[in-house]
Amino acid sequence: MQLRPRSLTAALLITAAGAAPALASEELLQNICSSCHTAEESGLSRISGQRKTPEGWMMTIVRMQQAHGLDISSEDRRAIVQHLSDSQGLAPSEAAPFRYALEKDPNAQESFDEPFASMCARCHTGARGLLQNRTPEEWTLHMDFHVGHFPTIEYQALGRDREWYQIARTEISSYLAEQNPLETAAWTDWQASDKQPVAGDWVVITDLPGIGEAYGRLTVTGDTSPYQISGEFVTADGTTHPASGQMNLYTGYEWRANLDIGGTAYRQVLALSEDGNALQGRQFDRSNDALGAPLTAARAGANSVILGTVPSAVPAGEAQVQVVGTGLDSLASSHGDATANSYGAALSLAAEGNGVVTFSAGGTEGQIAHYTSVDSLRVEPEFTIARVGGGSDAGPPPVPAYFNAIGMWNGPDGTPGTEDDVRIGRVEAQWTVANAHDHAAHMKDTEFAGGMQANGIFLPAMAGPNPDRPFSANNAGELKVQAKAMGQQAEAMLIVTVQRFIDPPIR
Image 1 (cartoon, one colour):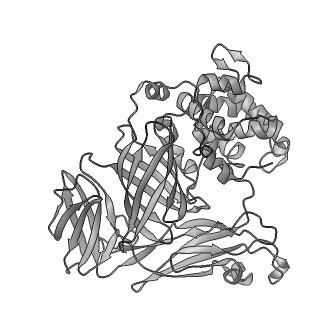
Image 2 (cartoon, rainbow, N blue to C red):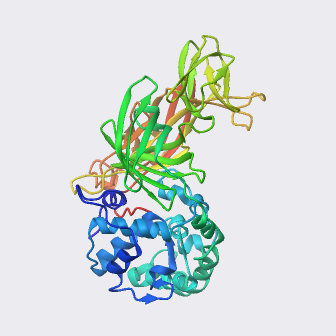
Image 3 (cartoon, rainbow, N blue to C red):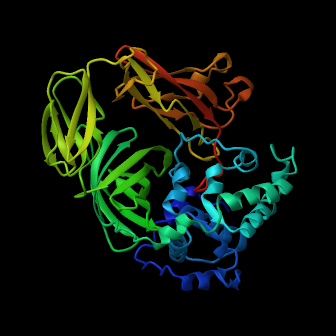
């Protein structure tokens, strides 16, 4: 049985209602795992030779349940993930290059050298392979594991054209043993470092897809996982969305939270900075992780920090802008008056504008575009995918795509698309889709693949054969997503493809 990815993700956080969290300890690990794993000088066999992220350890334990009949409660499973992540996790610098996979960034694009790209990243993200560290022996056994669990791997594309198993056991295992060894200076230093407390008040800035740019304040209480979170998010129009939920902190910095924000379930995958004063990562809709956005936060009461503004840009005219940050009691600007508040400071802009308004406090500086016109538009992301879904078989749900229109000024050279262009920020736009090429027009992709909503979200069509299309084809397609605003137009490429039937926590 394949567990649904949402259940796996939630298991990193939730314990049974009313149950006391199980003790995260080596003793619990021995009690649960020693029936199959033998004791060695370094610890339990196989387990002691690996380091992984919380998601990586969760996937391993669930595989033990599915493939080997491990009987374990959800409370004990969460506790073991906590223990292994704390004692055999990744240092912040080891996880940093591949956080896009943990954060489920739908727009991340990978590029790896051969043979790793063809040997490993053809079946899953390269990040999944590099978000773990092992001994040389464990990397070799990992190659054996692939053939044992996926015996057709040698006969798939990019497998049958080479001696896959031989290359895996020699070139790939040795490469990974050198690239990601079990023992590293980064991990030794991180284990020895003092871990910073996470409890307290945090000022945050993000985007709630379909709702808009938002700022807020979250309060974390508790002494250990699971911590409690309460607070609110506020959009540019002043609407408040209450927030509450739980958070686990793994490895001293890996923040994993499930929050209810205004009635919608969100997931946060964030990293706590080594000084304990900043958070950075991604927040997304738990029912559809493609709908999410970056989130940054600063510990309230820390040194002066400016995270950004909500809105990120404003049309010329009198306007009220929230400068999001902390320590902004002395915020000053030559173009308006500022008043400190619990989210940073409210900045009142005068009517005049087309230009960049700067403001500063405590040695930190920020800016916002106050515009009467834009010279060009940019659609972000420039390329992404969506997936058809649902249908009569009630398979995986559709995966939408989220776009924003960004206003630009040409800069000193007066030419769009050059390095001196000035990014204004998000602007309101009208959205349409067009066929990407002649074949897409022949297949009538704009009629069948899905459509844009006014809020920049593309909703794909249902999955399954469509008798109204040539050859009863699926509702896949290739589209141009077009934005129009203030007399300008821009477009991005969107591939609407088929369902993803296997969706683990690390893809």
